[in-house]
Length: 156
Image 1 (tube, rainbow, N blue to C red):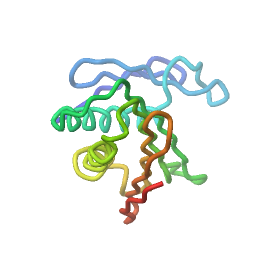
Image 2 (image 1 turned 30 degrees about the horizontal axis):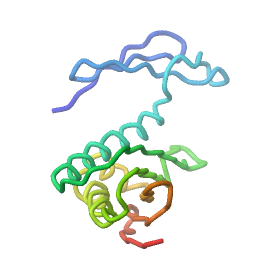
Image 3 (image 1 turned 60 degrees about the vertical axis):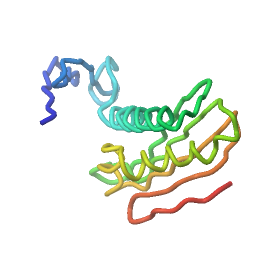
Image 4 (image 1 turned 135 degrees about the horizontal axis):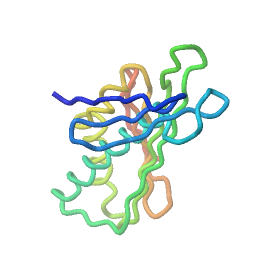
């Protein structure tokens, strides 16, 4: 079973240690009593989503023998105004430098990750609408949406 240990470091600073032994520092902004010495806990959620779906997409594209020169993601989250301030909307921008002829395979890899394989996405979709934007060579090629009961694909 995955696990984590959290160690209080003072003020609002915490050290998280994963079951695999990796460490992350979490802190809040000075106006919230912290000293800005670490990532915010809700930022770690977005980072976890990116890591999870990114690993899926690369694995799927490797199996499809799709080559790309670079792959980056930008993840934007909009949180509820009231507490608990859970994510309401999340946009994942998948940015590839790749052959545009591979768009269908890239779209399939992103779709499989978002809707079948990514455990973080599956966890978040109960409360947040997640939109995936697929860019190839700087151009938006399509979007996929899911979460909150909304599963659809629309080309651009």
